[in-house]
Image (cartoon, rainbow, N blue to C red; front, top):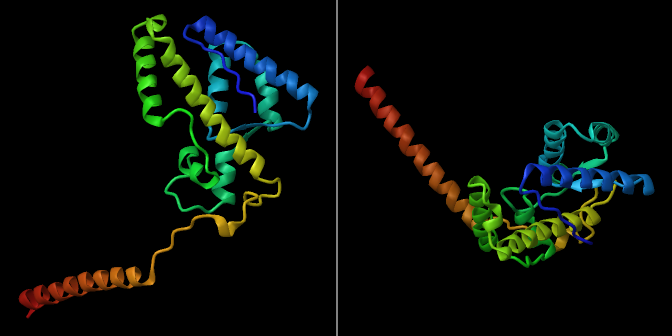
Length: 205
């Protein structure tokens, strides 16, 4: 996979980056009519519509993309097709299942994003160190790679990843632990019920 990016630290740069992406997508779509654009969660379609409205450009092309179903939300597909031992189906939570190693540590990326946010809020993005921009670029590239792995692993008929289900690390609760938890719950329930009966006798004889 080849990762490409465009920075938009000003309105004009953001507009040019938006137009570049839309034009590139339409060009590839004309070349490969069966292609799709994979994204994770609904942020990307919302951002495209927001930028289209903000800059009043590429309206027809965005409309064609949306009507044709060109954009595919892998998050929605994975939530329905895969059962994993995670609390949420975020990219970072699922990375453990395909052994993806990030080039940029998450804590380092968070620090870099805070610095860029401050620079943008103060209107001084050019004062942000070049290494900070490279860190964020590496973080964004890392986010694209697991998305690509998920897209290539899922099949059109909704099957799971090509990796056998038996190899997934599904954490099951031991029976002994379940029994202990049930005993605790049952004990609490009995104490509560005994208290209710005592109070009932006190007030109603």
